[in-house]
Image 1 (cartoon, rainbow, N blue to C red):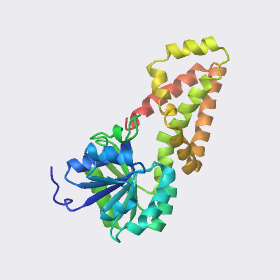
Image 2 (cartoon, rainbow, N blue to C red):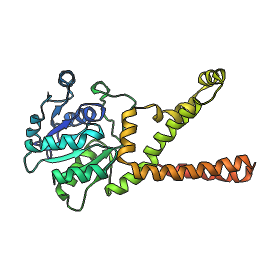
Image 3 (cartoon, one colour):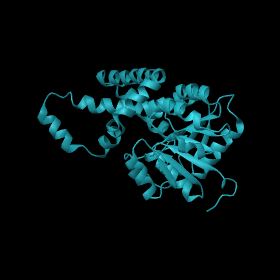
Image 4 (spheres, rainbow, N blue to C red):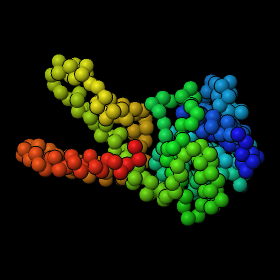
Length: 287
């Protein structure tokens, strides 16, 4: 389907992995010209051969042709990529990103490029790389946009319109509010999931560990999944959202202590009350 309102807009994507590749696939299917940059020539070749992008290069100069550029690299590379991009951008080019932490990114990149709109599409799979790119990855999923008071409104609205074309549910909030919220529902679960796996490894009886590994089923699989993900992502989340993550971990530790005390004191009524509350509270989340 062709979208006349956007048809003249060229889309640039730096970082052709799962997120960047999936954005490219969806926008190409909607009539956009999409140009991609990757640090690896092999990825560029695959992206072009598979039709993910119209054209790909290892050189950021290709982004000079884009009206809107998505930076889809790991968190730690976003600022440096933005700095390298700036010389190639026209004054009207809109720059956005897909990083899962917003405050330090928004502060850094907005100072480099005033026409920057912080973004976070909250979707993904366990796979990575250009081969993992899929259509409709963002349909029905949250897409958070985090402008500052100085961000040009037309740029914010353009990024939001693109997000809606991807089928996402758009939310607009401040960068700090975003980081505080995702600390609870994304970054804290990552760390608690990782510590669950780590705790199991502390069991001193190897026969018990071996038995547990064979008996593990859906409950352990679901609660340990994010803890078994990309270690680089976990470190970047902790580094860039350190304050909010520490805050949520501290409160979580207090809650865990309450459960420990109830069980140690055999206060089954208090434990049941807590579990009834969590059973009901879980329904309030967008699962």
